[in-house]
Length: 297
Image 1 (cartoon, helix red, strand yellow):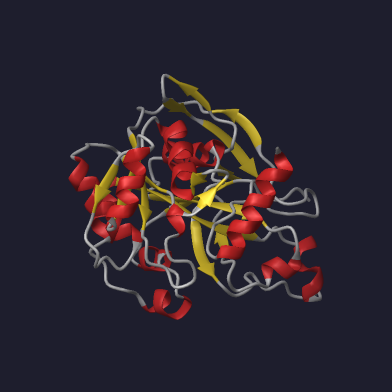
Image 2 (cartoon, rainbow, N blue to C red):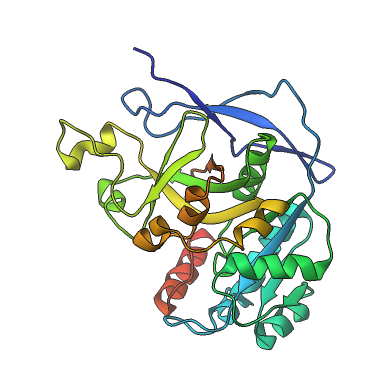
C-alpha cells in the first residue's frame, strides 16, 4: 500500500533578484518505504505575489550558562557576526535586536545594523517585535534567527521563507528527521507532529507519536520522527498579535513558547531540512564548534 503524501517546501529554492520562487515537494511520512522524509520537487502551478522579508536576530549578553556568548570568538570573529552574515546573505539585509550596548557596538564594528531594545522582554519574539517597529520597515514576513546559531545555512532560511508560498501559513518553523532513537528520547529535543499539509499539530518534549505493537527501540524504523529546530518566521501582523497573548496551559506544561501560538489557533507551517543546526549554549559548545570548523577546513 502506498503511504499518504503531504506537502511542504524543499531546501532547493531558486532566487530571482533577491526574491524567492516557490518550489513544492511531497513528504512521504512512512520509513517502511523511505528512510525519513523524501523531497520530491514539482512545479507550483500558481505563482504567488512576492513577499518582502526582514531578518532580525535577537541577542542578549546575559546568559546563565554562557554570559556574553554572542561576542565569544569563533574562527576569529564574534559568534553574532557569523549569524548576521548568514542571515544577510539569505535575505539581503539583517538587524540584531539587543539590549546591550557591547553587542550593538560589536555589530556596528563589522558593518552590521543593530537596534537597541528594552531589557525587560520575556522572549526573543517580544524583542524582535519591538525591533521591527524601530526599524520603520514595512515587510510581509519577519524571520527570527537566534544569535547563538552560527551554523544556520542559507538553504534553511530559504526553506523557512518558502513556507509562506502557502497563503494559509501564519508562522513557519523548521523540522529535521531524527537519526537515532536515543536522540528522539531526549526531552531537550522537542518533537513535531504535522498534518498531511505540513502544518504543526503539536510540539512535545515527550516521544510522540506512540507506536503501538513495537518495542520503543524500534520505533524510528516505523515512523520518521521530526526534530524541531527553533528558527521561526512570522507574518508581520501575526507577530504583533502573538506578542499580546498570555501564556497558555500547554506552554506552561511543556515550557515551549510555540504552544502558546498553536493553542491560540495560529497555523504553523513546518519546512523540512536535512541539515543540523549547532547552537552555542555553553563554553563547551564553542570548543566543539571551533573543532568542527577546523575539521571542515
